[in-house]
Amino acid sequence: MPTAKLIEVENVHRYFGAVAAVRDLSFSLHSGEVLGFLGPNGAGKSTTMRIITGNLAASAGSVTIGGYDLHRDPIAARRLLGYLPDTPPLYHDCTVEEFLRYCGRLHAINGSQLSAAVDRGIDRCGLGDVRSRLIAHLSKGYQQRVGIAQAIIHDPELVILDEPTVGLDPRQIEEIRQLISELGHSHSVILSTHILSEVQAVCSHVQIINRGELVLHSPLAELDPVLAKQPHQVEFQTPPSIEQLRQLVGINDVSVKEDGYFHINFTENTSGIDTLLAASLENGWGLRQLTAPQLSLEQLFMQLTDTSALPTPAPAEETT
Amino acid sequence: MTAAVIARTELRILLRSPIAWATLSSVCALLAWLFLLQIDQYTLYQSQLLALANPPGVTELVAAPLFGNAGLILMMVLPLITMRSFAEQERNQTLTLLTTAPISLTAIVVGKFFGICGFLALLLTLLLAMPLSLIGAAELDFGLLAANSLGVILLVTSFTAIGLWASSLTSHPGAAAMLTFGLLLILWLLESARGEQGTTASLAQFSTLFHYQGFLNGLVSSGDIAYFVILTLLALGLTVLRLHSKRYYT
Image (cartoon, rainbow over all chains, first blue to last red; front, side, top):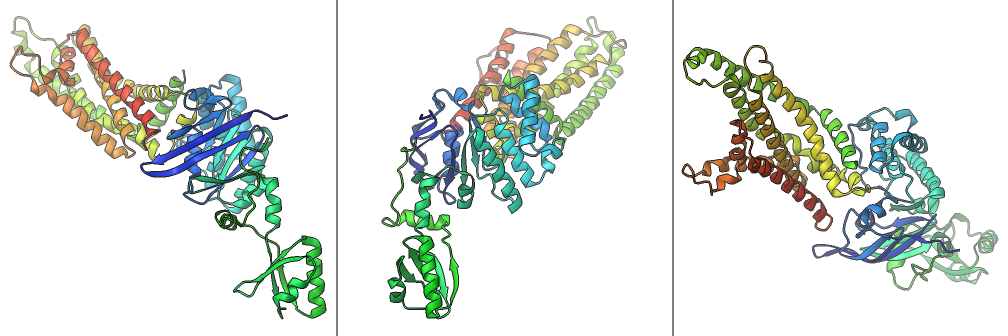
């Protein structure tokens, strides 16, 4: 059964003077989906986030959240929304608990519900130890968590997080990721980042923005075959000729890079690798290194901007 | 409703900042000093005053000048209190907390306005306590005192509204303070554009001092009240408009 679209962004443009920060952006998200929003710095991620949270007006186009037009019915639309901007909007002179109570009240939560909501937020974000400390005295990781707690205090249907793990140490990143995965069970989440592994870890959908334009919107699962087509990187002690390699069964394409590594595309990964290993032993090529494809965001980008390389998976809007 | 929530938190945060207490203590010390000077003068000339047929009372000679000075001092000090309201939040990007919540811009502006008004209530209570401390020692004219109090309340609320507007115009608190001070000073000094006695159709009509003087003299006129109320609403309205347009032109 197709669920209703929770957020629908249609043909949104935003200009800063003559500069187009976002051009003709359209996408939608259904309940229960976690969307990873990727893009290099300055691609328009934060601008998009600010537009879909109503903090910035679009020059053209519309944003609808839960059926409410963000422009015409902003208060109803914002009730469904929790937002962590790239700089967490924290009141440094407040304690964590005080601040969260304030956030709850701003969302019209009162009385015993308020205490329950604050306790739940503190619990979910692991803030129990610091609940009565001043926000100014917290480490960046904890401040980030308070920022997330602030965004989910009213149990919104849609949580929008702008680069929630930036500037954190690896352990904190892991913790925040875990929190986001948990959120994904009960909320829809839009998560912006420029780290692809983050998206692979927590998201169900991914979209990439480049220079203000959406270049990819796809369920993550549909990207797997694309990722699998990436070449393995192979190093030999006594390298065979390219022709020798090409003759092997299961090898699709071979090329040698300047650094001496072979880039090999297998038609079918497991059997192709076995064949290569056997051939290496037999002929004494001395295989030293075989690295599975690591598709980084940069590589994906190069492919996406390079016209012919990628069979663009499912265009935006075709998900159910 | 939400405005009250914002007002309460704004006040609480303001009272945690050193600037609030530094302001409160310096202004009170200054006013207390001026108050004592007035008392001193009054006792010095008291015997001569008694010789007059209809001598001015202690309220007229001590309280009214005190409130006059308070207006002037608060004009210089209030910009420091209002400057942070929007400018600092804009700078720290914490305004997003309010602009993303399901509340109207009007509620945000009104909330911040009343938050500062709460602080001013504290300050004005201390101001009022000075003449009230003469109860028992002298005959006080409570009618005049009430007129003075109403005047100073209207005056500082309009200052606050103007300060909020200036604060919404920039993301630099210092610039907001300077802008507020400039606006307030000009509005105050317009009074000097008063022409010959009796010619009222002049720029002086737009002066805060022009309308404040009535209250200081014990004259509560609906025109003066309307002036301050309109000035306050106008500045608050401009602040809302400014916040609204910020979403379009950044």
